[in-house]
Amino acid sequence: GLGISPGAVVVTAGQCPWADRIDVLTGLVGVARPGVSASSSVGSVLVAAASASVTSRERLRAVLVAAPPAVGWALAARTAGLVGVVPPVLLRAAALPRLRSLLPGLPASSASALVCQALRLPGGDPVSAHPADAAVVGVVLVSVVSSLTGATVESLAGEAA
Image (tube, rainbow, N blue to C red):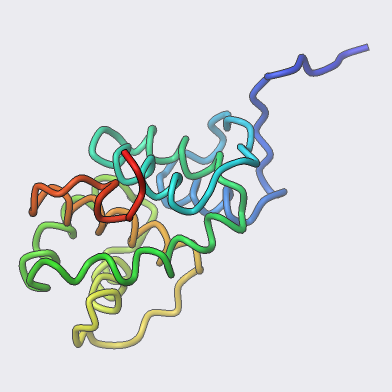
């Protein structure tokens, strides 16, 4: 019979709301996913995803879909306190273009509202987004803070390099 060899990458669309939403956000629906890394922590995924977001949306997606869903959902809370070291207006201006290129599946109005929400800025109507949206926007914001301040993502996240 047909079997899947160990280590094979399998698309599991529809089976994992976390990874399915990441696929939509990155515009990579239907692309094979790496297996979930059960040993991932919120800090290690934050560091890897923020670093990957500097390179490409494909790398960002690969890191995020390999995260266990519970780790992915926790990213929004973990990133919330890490973005206040840069003036909000500067961070918003730098983040929005990067969000548009990394997350083509995130409507522009949602991106702007989520950035304002993360920075506690007035941003119009509250956004009712998928919980993964805030998590991924938070990861990108940490990456932008890193590039604006010169601080490493590891130091911002409190993770050993």
